[in-house]
Amino acid sequence: MEALRPAKNRNEANDPSSPVLRFGADKPLRLDAGIQLSPFQIAYQTYGTLNDARSNAILVCHALTGDQHVANANPVTGKPGWWDVLIGPGKIIDTDRFFVICSNVVGGCLGSTGPASINPATGEPYGLDLPVITIRDMVRAQVMLIDHFGIDRLFCVMGGSMGGMQVLEWAASYPERVFSALPIATGARHSSQNIAFHEVGRQAVMADPDWRGGKYIEAGVRPEKGLAVARMAAHVTYLSEAALHRKFGRNLQDREALTFGFDADFQIESYLRHQGMTFVDRFDANSYLYMTRAMDYFDLAADHGGLLAEAFRGAQTRFCVVSFTSDWLFPTEESRSIVHALNAAGAPVSFVEIETDRGHDAFLLDEPELFAAIRGFIASAARARGFEPA
Image (cartoon, rainbow, N blue to C red):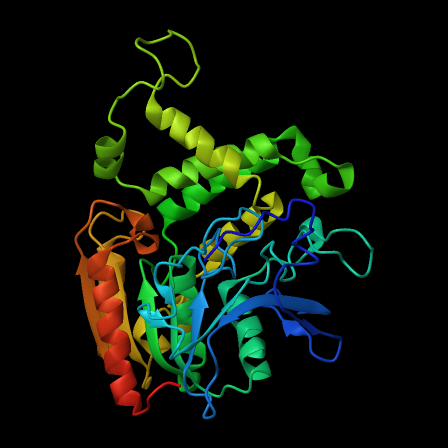
């Protein structure tokens, strides 16, 4: 697909380059914070055609800094969709056969109601006046979107990282509406280590003088330095030591010797700085606070008396849980605990641990073993469903 010219002057938070579903006061979004969010909107993308039986729909859930542009060029960056290698005509998730839906989560910054959206009560961006959003809130909004399409039961819900958390929430809260579930590189709760990394990032954002207590949009500034540092710290957690060593080692960046200063002497330093700088062009700082908080609050077992198996008790959903050997953000042990809980609940589950040195980000990369696992699971689920997708 030809890359789009980035829409530099378009306000994607309020006027996105996506279809938008708007809900008025008669259909508020009930939040875990005890607040009814209204009005609100969901920006989404679809690919393929919904069949007459409405049985071929796959919901793709995006990760923390992802968006709805899973298989089309991103209107902000012009780059291909973040899972473009997986989803499309003739690809593993074949949009000639399946109807794929991906929405920007509530709390995001590319068209669904989030902190950069205009608060109708004030005429100004919500900023921190937006209630804190949880993973369950994101899924509730997705349910309203799926209802809009008249889909009673999704053929599959799939996603990695924060997207995987949404998959698990769907399967736990709406088991009758999910035929198959594919949570990848995720966990049933956020660990204390992961919460700690997120807090470092949030503090970096809030320490930036241009954050202005979350009201930087009104002031015409952006906390770019703080958000870039947050992204740099987070990006390290998405990689592995082996991958960093293989790609960068201790190689110097565009120089023959150390400068004995604090410029980017090493390639890894230059790489991280680049990651930080490009991130601030496509993501809202307050949304980063909200997304990280949603992941921190996620604890599926705590919602079910401390027993994870109870979250899936009686579920008929077919599961395939995937982890990566070098993922230290969501290590395999966390996936195994999900599998054990599903076994205890009597749910049908398969488990794949993929050997790779590419770390947590492997789910976004061209990993043949991952693609083979997804292909096999989707084919098996289609046979079990007893239909031929249109």
